[in-house]
Length: 406
Image (tube, rainbow, N blue to C red; front, side, top):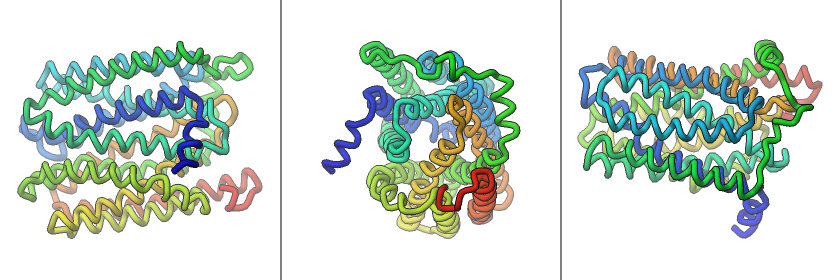
């Protein structure tokens, strides 16, 4: 534990501020966003496929927003993009408080996903800017743990606050965003942080950025694989809630517990599992993680009690732990100098999975039931392995390196 503490302290002070903020942002998202599908099911006549479509369209907007936000941060700097995004976050959550109109919720959900797509890659790029390459895998693990600390607290807090009123979680979330943006602005000023990417020698053009993304087939295959794993994760967070609500007594409470278990498992096992996984290549970790996702989906399909759902969620989370930071490392290693924001932004095209998962999962749930839905997404998790493997082989040819270098 002492070595872990010393390693954490070795990061740039701005990294510490970002990790704290990521916890606050994740609390806000965790106590509101996972329950949006349930909220729409309670207050509208929409069926699961329509709810999945509304939520999925927001994810599509976020997919394009990630590339725009990441590239923009390479031009005008991370600070401006992060601060502006956090203020819009707060306004969106206040908007959820003030309306129950389905059309307005649809628009706010699009804006919400745009904010997420700006915040995530730009905060990762900023962390990468101020962290040596040899520390980045552990840094991304810390970041993922911070996200899940927030998501461990958020769903349970959201369940409690929603007993007062369904809009209260969104109001509290808006306050958290305002609090964090003030902390971040103070930190930038106190630590005299200057954007690294604004150096003249590192300037890129929109044309060069688009050219690189269009022609980098290695990145393309990694994104395709990531789209499939994100579809599985997106299906779990949206259609699982509707399945439990309709199929089990106290299904909404079970869903909140499963979401918190997901985050608690990350907090408890992220460091030790990541340290163990460092002996393998990122590709091998992704393969193991995808297999665990497939096993957990089969578990969801045939679970008939809370105990087996909890076990399945634990297996699912272990798969996530192996996959998420390994994807970050793969993207980081193939990124040209001066284009970290652009490549991290391009990686958010995996957000198509967050559209495919809820939408396709909603169709399967409505037409064929939960067993068919979960089994199908188990197969999708296994299919993702091919695309990651293909991207690895192309990277190997490009670099002239062995598989062990990835």
